[in-house]
Image 1 (cartoon, rainbow, N blue to C red):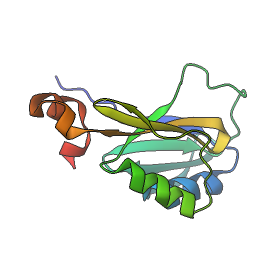
Image 2: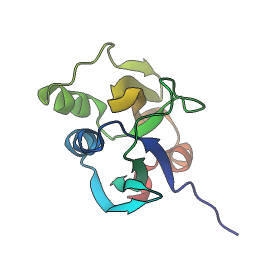
Image 3: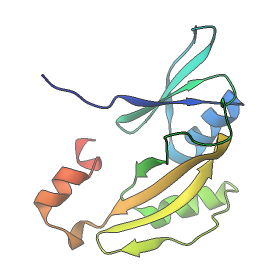
Image 4: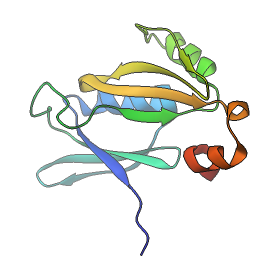
Length: 137
C-alpha cells in the first residue's frame, strides 16, 4: 500500500485574494473551482503539491495544529526578490542553517509560510534525494 500527503486544506476569508497571492507569488495553478459542502471550494497546485481552500473565514484567529506550510524553491534569493517586486514585505532576512536556507512569510488569513531552499552542495546526493521535493518535478 502506498500513501502520500495530497493537500493542506485552509479556510479563506477572501478566496480570490488567497488565489491571487499564491498565483502571483508562487505560480500556483487552479485545478478546480466548484461548490462543495455548501461553500466555494478551490484546489490549487504549487509544483507537485496542492492546497485546497474553503470560501469561509477561519474558525479562529490562530492556526490550530498547523504551524506553517513549507514551500521549497531552488533559488530562495530570487523568490524573495520576485515577491518584493510584487509588494510583499519580509520582516526578517533569509536565515542560513548549513544545508537549509529559509525565511518565514505571512500569507492571507495569517497562514505562516516557510520558504526554503535545500543547499545541494552542503549535503550528500542521497540526502538531497530524500528530502527535496524538487527532484520529483
